[in-house]
Image (cartoon, rainbow, N blue to C red; front, side, top):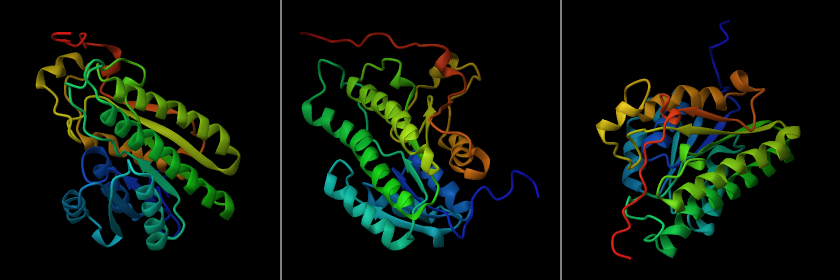
Length: 262
């Protein structure tokens, strides 16, 4: 049998994907059900979730959940729902993130926007991962967790709430990978470049900064995401941050923000 056949075990594997209503999260969730993996599609928008599931190749394997992961109670509700419909959850993809606005630079971002960005990206990601890891450890089962971070975990973006949240997630991946590796739980990050999805509308002129010469699409992340999630393909990979950006990280084109009148 070919090495690249059957990356997942449909009789065992089940996934929870946050931010599954749009962009990269949606593309990965659709990719998982396409590989036969029962998957909870979680998002803040019921309309987006419905559309994402309708466009999936295996709608029978997709289970919707709607809620705001910036609220701790919603994280608990999501876990309860996912356990009830899936049983043992072996895979997590944390892609949920609030929309970002270019106007929210260091002198303009307000407290609520700052807190929501960190709550959804970092706090929810940690809570969901830890609770699922507890289940896996208790069951003596391996698992694979994937966080969507950003090039701006290490490069300023003029959006300090976003960059610091993603930087925190990048270190969280390493902390969790080191802690849970002995239990067969792998934790990795996927680092997208300029992907025209999930609320990010890239100027086509940005392509000139990308060595491969074109903007990314959410679907460009799916093969790598599935490969990293698969214990068959990436069973010896943990604590890694894998960049999928067309080479964009080889350059930094951002100028400092216009602060206007101070």
